[in-house]
Image (cartoon, rainbow, N blue to C red; front, side):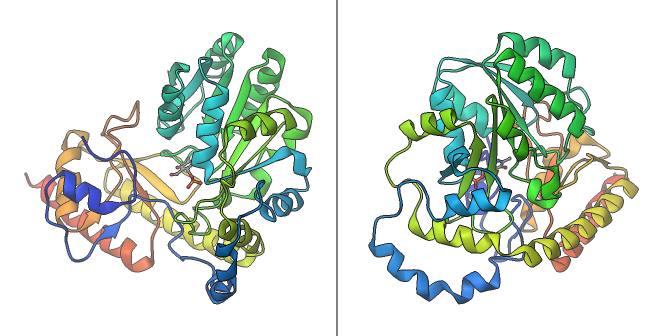
Length: 361
Ligand SMILES: Cc1ncc(COP(=O)(O)O)c(C=O)c1O
């Protein structure tokens, strides 16, 4: 059994008892390869005194900055120690309730919900390439469910379902009193205009979760937020520990929001790389999903060779994200995050060699 998450590459080598190569190229995680924005690096020393005091209990000044950024009310913003903490708090709120998860998707919703004994209804999409939502089936299930988790754009397929479909589900959720949780951790790479945050003002059965860790490359710091009804903000707060958002995160988060040029440059570069690499994979007989974000999900021309491919890449120090723990993908697909041009060129070369060799076997 392989580790369930991208990142922490040494764990994979340890688990498989493969000596750790000197050079690792890790495509298994989805964090912005450009690294922390420069202004944050430059101002680092001035942040040091923050460590000496307790942070604000509600994640200020980040909470107010988020409200301004999205032009929403502060009472609708809940700041968390990464989006991961928000899933745990939501799972507390949803303990013993009926919750729908649409697969294949991020595995941590299920993990958090299971720990709180929620009754999970698993629905797998029929078309992986388009991660096409089974709207009528979902609507039927929502009548008797308390909540629905949807990852938009989805991890690991990268697909953003059509806005009209999402709006239909939000309206249905409101009518059926079924909380719709949209995980927009990767919407940063698409366009803020695609976010459904504005809908929260008119819908008490909507919760949008966001992560600051991917776009701004601050995964180690931990910072995320939810935009939802005031009632749910209060409810989640009851389960959070005191000072759950550290003082550095709350200040650096505000600085990140000012980095719109960095965001635009990142989107431009990632989009170019995604298009180029998708074309490369397709030319070589791979199937790719319709990703609109900073990673690609693909299947080899011979999916039965997936394990061999994974191990062969590891031996070259290249880590791609396996999909063993994604329901509906079952290890037959891979996900790769976009990295520097040099790293993408290396992956292209190694994959070309591997695929050419396989065609002679
Ligand atoms: C879809 C999705 N949502 C949320 C998260 C967690 O984000 P954070 O680092 O803010 O906890 C991840 C992390 O991999 C993710 O892939």
